[in-house]
Length: 606
Image (cartoon, rainbow, N blue to C red; front, side):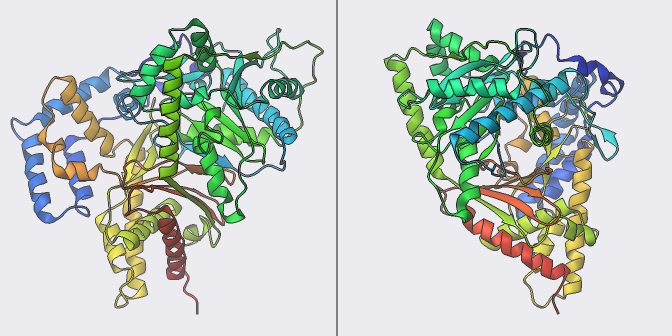
């Protein structure tokens, strides 16, 4: 089970929403419904002879003497005794037990529009505003003033919001844990690989003003002008087992333990990045996204990160800025709400007068680095640079149209983009693949995410006929509508807790919990293919021109994130260079041309 320490209380907020929290429990879908949905999801992906084999496995699984009904009963029993029967399992399995490095593989980054400064002075002024805005948001959450969010008329679970601040992932040799500290009064600022503990509340409990914060940041800059320090933050980029072992060695020293604990307990981390190499305008958005995601490498700003921290704001001297977050505690929607608040706050002047209170110097955090820790850092630097060099990122702003175009034709914008993604992938690879789009489960208490599977029989039929000149435009339009309507139906099912992937995972984990052998259904080649996500996608709708990026889930896959605005769409595409078959640039260019072709299909030119 997921372990979160230090949660004696969440906030006043929780009590304000008990009116609905006890009502919306995550359902266990009917077993037959999930297995039928699983078979339908396999049909576009595997040949008929393999489907026959899988059908037999399913019949044995759910038939007389099969494990299916027993495991289903176990899940239903679990659901009766928990607010959400899958969330803890999901966080443990998907995040805390994962041993992959957090940068690229797990932590998403959000890059926001460039600010109007280009030197360290503007950097510190904006960083002061950013800190004040984040603290203001925390105050709104703590005092129960954050409005309940709604989707399709239903209230959404707000329980993750109090956990955004003062949370951190703690590495372990076999699995990680999450810690939360509810009474922190400081943030961590890192510049030139050096960490500082900076109080952000005055002695009377009031939040510091922007001018007070700015004065403290000036002090930190003066104390961190050299870059000859060991980049301790690089350790957090390691393989989780390796970092867990190094973490144990690091904390044997009292000074190191105090410094690490200060970072972990901070409300959030502010990364003040040094200037980076200038690139052409067409590559700027990709370079900026890479800087937020991983820091650009060990000779750039990667040492200015503590990847375990739930929230890390990044501000560069060139006006670039963004947010990097750790997913075991937080996911996209709460982060988007936080960023919207920050952007609105940044439009206003500082509302608070600066009190005449002497401020203590921010505390520099020191580390005793022995031979073993030095060796750990050098290995981490090598491994991170290999990972960064392996990742290809392509960001682009598609400006021909946005979400209003499909709306004008009574089509779902998200489903329309999903069709474009499937078609573009097929054009590049001459096949469809296991693809997942992320759906929020926040209609339920403690809800996290589930997957919407993009490849359907209707999607495949449209993809196969799109370039066929013998098929009329009217027929193609009808196939497009059928593909979109099918995807919308799957989306509705996912939002109602009736998707298949979390249920299948639950059945598998229930077998393990009961000490049973993993059912053959999950050892089947088809299940391995169906969960080898070659195309990982995510829509992150925001009120600003931001772009999110993350790495592919598998070595031979892609990750595509998009933010649709009314008349344009921001995309990021990532792939690994080690795979010769995948190229982010190729898929991005094909996606661009495919969207143009779909526009022509909807609105043919005379």
